[in-house]
Image (cartoon, rainbow, N blue to C red; front, top):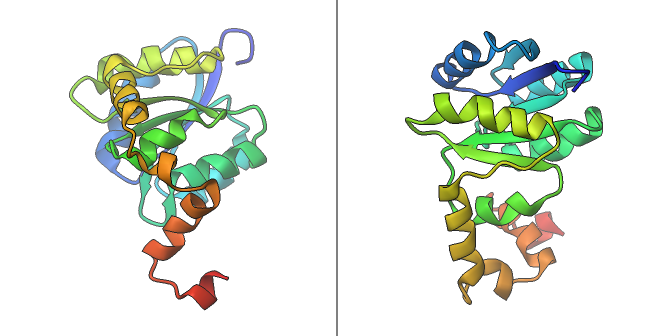
Amino acid sequence: MNANTCTIIHIEDDSVWRDLAESVLTPLSWVRKYAAFPTAIDGLAGARRLRPDCVLLDLNLPEADGFDVADELVRVAPGVRILLMSARTDDAALARLKLPHIGGLIWKSATVAEQLPVALREVAEGRKYFPTEVKDSVRRLRADSQAFFKILSDREIGLLPLFGLGLSDKEIA
C-alpha cells in the first residue's frame, strides 16, 4: 500500500460478484483505485498496467486456473498481495493456500460483504486472512492421514491437472 491507500484489481468472471465487490470496496477511504476484469487475460493485462497493491481473485475462471493466475500475477506485479474469493472448498484448493503469495481466502457466501473489507485490509497490510471456517477446513485436511498430498509426491501432484485434461502419457512427457 502507498501510505494509507490501496489500488485493487478484481479478476472475476461472474458479474454478480464483481458488482458486489465494487459496491463494498469503492466507498472505502483507503481504496485509491478499484478495477474489475472478467477474464484472466484481461486481469493480467490490468495488473501489468495498473501495478495493483492487491488482487481479489476468483479461483474458478473459465479459461484459467486461479492458482496459475496467482502465480503469474506475482511475476507481472512483484509485491502484489492476493486475496482469493471463491466457492472452491475442495482439498486441492485448501492444500495450495500455503503458497507464500496467497494472503487469504474468503468463501463466496452470504457474509462476503462483511468479510471483504476486513480481509482485504489485512492482506493489503501484509497479513494473512483466513476466517474460522477456512482454518477449520485446512486443519481437517492436514489431520487426514489419507490426504492426497501425504500420499503423492510434489511431482505427481503437479501432473494431476494434465491427467485431468485427458492428455496421453506422450503428450504430458
